[in-house]
Image 1 (cartoon, rainbow, N blue to C red):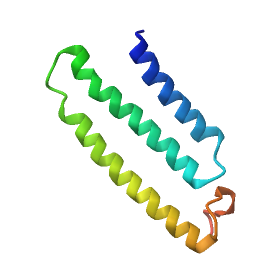
Image 2 (image 1 turned 180 degrees about the vertical axis):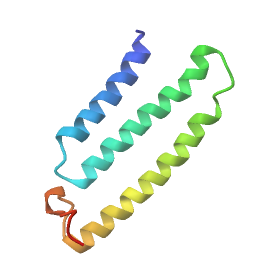
Image 3 (image 1 turned 90 degrees about the horizontal axis):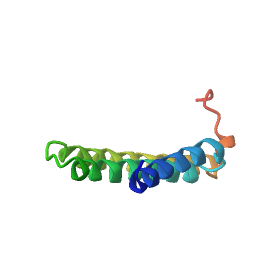
Image 4 (image 1 turned 60 degrees about the vertical axis):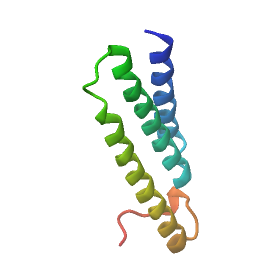
Length: 98
């Protein structure tokens, strides 16, 4: 495994571990999701360069568009939950209550 692959894999793994273990605030969960998407975007951007093909150049742009939509939705949920519950602590949210 090259150093480039190792760095992308370790960035994705660290952000997924951060999402799994540090879920006290909604903003930290959203930041972990964004770092996972960023590491996947960089890996997909470097993949056609390493394989010397031009067929998969649209995939990183499509993923970047979905990542922007995910970030906007996450921030909208953060603002709405902070207005209704008063904070962004995840233990304050009861998903079974309307």
